Length: 258
Image (tube, rainbow, N blue to C red; front, top):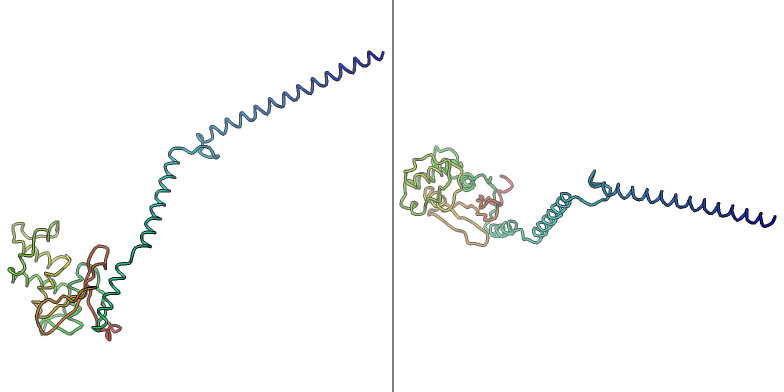
């Protein structure tokens, strides 16, 4: 009888062991299936939406590389600006120091192409110089007209210093193509806002019968013309990003009154 009991218990234990083993194998198989499914979803996630922390697409990598390059470029520009002297401020400070002993301060005029003519006109008005007894107050336009007329009337003094480059690409030139170069140049002076320079200053100084003194940083004043009267303008090489600029001056005592 005892042998039969022990045999029955052994059989029951074996059956229980087998049942537990089958249950364990089933759970492991289920876990493997879940892991495989998760790996498959993660693999296709970048293709479907580009998210989920998967691999970046080629286009995304290119965008990020370009953005990083632009940020690095802007950083280099900012560093260069921080380490580059402010030449405009340096020029203005040097010119201010030169003008103060003369009792002058810079009087700004608009940078509209008429700056030279506006500066001369301002000097004439501020110093009470009239072109004639019944003439209207000088303006940039009247200074352009005066310079052009004088250069045409004294062509031998100015024509040698004018070449085709002076009127190249000028779409406003309405003079005949076969007109003398000086005539075309003076038409441009008279009717456009072309910048003036040393030729025009020389013409104005002679026409006005005065001395025009041009003050620039680090240089002795350049004087043009003859006469008892003198007017003063300033020349700024670095005033504007586009190029040079002329201003007028004021007596320091009158600066706050203008």
